[in-house]
Every structure is written in C-alpha cells, then in structure tokens.
Amino acid sequence: METQELHRGRLIDHIQLVVRDLAASQAFYEAVFEVLKVPVGGTGEGYFWADELFVSTADSEAAQGQLTGRHHLAFQAQDPAMVDAFHKAALANGGTDNGPPGERPYHPGYYAAFVLDPDGNNIEAVFHGKAQRSAPSVKLTF
Image (cartoon, rainbow, N blue to C red; front, side, top):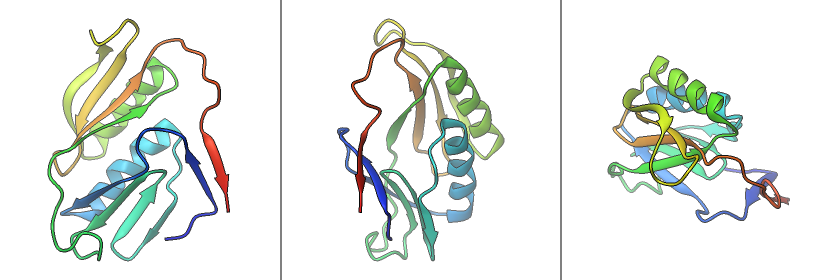
C-alpha cells in the first residue's frame, strides 16, 4: 500500500477492520466517504483504504486469519446536512440504522447519526457545532 499524501495530527494513526464480505464493505464505505468528502486512497487484492481506515479480508497478512470484533468509529462531518446525507447513503448501501440524525446530549451542538456497517460495526458521523480549527489536518507529502 503506497500513498503520496497523508493527513495526520489526530488521535488515531490508523485502524484496520477485517471483514467477511469485502465487496459489501467497500460499497458501504465508498458511499459514506463520498458524502463525507473522504477520498478512497487505494484498493488491492483483498483490501481498500481511506485516510486512516484500512479494510481487508481475513486472508490479509496483517489480519492473521481473524475477523475484527465490533467497533465504534466516528467520522467528522462539516455540518448537520452532511450527517443527514451520511445516514441516507449508509442505509442505501447496506447499512442498518443505529440512531437517526439528531442532537445528542454529549455536549451542546453535538449532531450525529449512527449506522451499523455490513459487519455490525457502529459507524457514526458527527458535527460538533460551530468551532474554529487551527488547521483541518497536518499534511504529510512523500
């Protein structure tokens, strides 16, 4: 897996999900990433990746033949409309509702939606309300 550009400076460096049905997972994640404006970084025999998320089959060397368990991943959205679009795209591409778009009590302005991906992972899109960022991310170019 090669990349010429990475965005770093957040808490998680990368996550790998090992899935039963790569095609179903790829259709799901490509649809929600299109809405979230996250480009798919690449694909190969038995895997695909986007930003810090790597998704592979159990046959990949890193998976060592084991599926990952249920995880909760939250992706940042630019506004509530993007959260709504995420939820709609996820449901239209193999996701199952796990909490419709709306405000949550976690902090003022927390607007999120939750879906289960084809392997039962709890996937969230969240808009934290109006805030000022020093930068969208740290960009590393190789």
